[in-house]
Image (cartoon, rainbow, N blue to C red; front, side, top):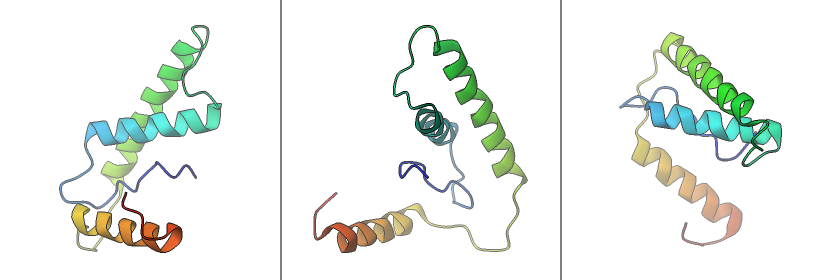
Length: 92
């Protein structure tokens, strides 16, 4: 999985449309192999991003959990700790 795609479910506040779009963009870039598509593929590329964003938002709206919502700051700190352990004490 692309490392830039972050978990979007069960956060307070919920994931924004921009976060869903960014995850969809990263997914399409990863599977297509294009960072920026050619003009011939631009429409298909953009359509895929929009369709995946809609499907992602539908999924997030449909999921249920009894767990408490996660805190973005706590999750970010955990990610920094994992990165420090993995790559050394680099500031990110």
